[in-house]
Length: 447
Image 1 (tube, rainbow, N blue to C red):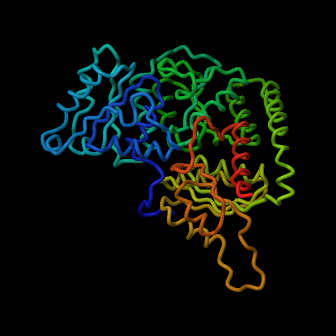
Image 2 (cartoon, rainbow, N blue to C red):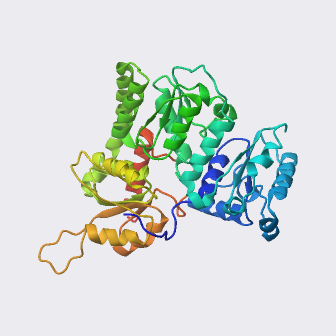
Image 3 (tube, rainbow, N blue to C red):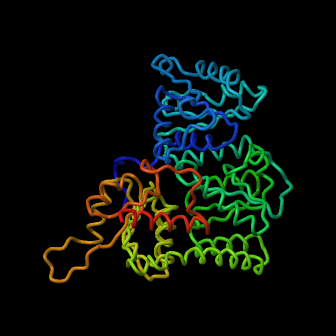
């Protein structure tokens, strides 16, 4: 069941999700139409929570904003928005300008789209994507922003490239490893001979967005995020989609490549050859931990706390590749009953035969409660199996929980204020090695 309130949220608002997504786009200028402080608060949350993401080009503390005040709330903020767009076009060099909105201006009824339409003849394109934050969190903001770009910026094309694909579902900022993950997913898909557009990855530009309508398939690297965008993509541009789990490690990456290969009717022999080559490299590196794993008895119980992309992916990786015992999983998204059912199904059929205790809750303080439900205290029982040795994979919010029980904490999800992330990735074959390396490092660093 879900909490009735949110203690220490694990995501920004819808506006924050849109801002983080726009910040990942090259030469794209975000104009926030919202109350004073929105842009600054979002900047602080994204920077620290996303492993010190940084402001990028004209983002962060340099983010253009209308900063509406009481006068604008009373009389309307449309004139202030018009003024801000004009000054931003004059002073800030960009190739695309996108106006996104905060709660206040949507509540007072500012017609943002109408104001932005006045700039249809500007030298550079200016579009508006309303992002009312009272309707959802960062994941919802990502969906709104992507749907706005699909509708207003991506060019329609009747011609589809047979082996061209788009990758959706990895949310910049909310996935603290988003850029590295996109790089690895692109790498393994290119090994199948595909032309891969990740939108936000290394070397991508606005032409990748503009020409995304020529793809023959949209691949959602998530069973929950990006679904609405993909449905709208199919409606507007006629591109079908498939949804897969976030592939972490060799087992999941093999399934991922076979699923994509089947959807695009790629010769199975070619797919299997790529998988075999990747696994040979993967397990050659993986074998390096065999000695420390056995000598130090490194099998662990695990508690996983994360969103509905990471929680199932990490659980399966720990169970099926490390041979660990992921007993407790707390999924931190706000999900409806059908979404919860879809996510819960992903924890079934682990190779270990384990059936984790899975809870859905946004409340950080509930993790300890669920742990006690899954693993009751020792009440002076003659025989008691302690939850040890164990490790926690979660966010900075799990620090107190991990310290109370003496478990090492591996920060893998937003907010991650205790680590810096640059090009690190946990997706794919390479990502599985990196994750294993990080986990072992956190376990042995006190030696």
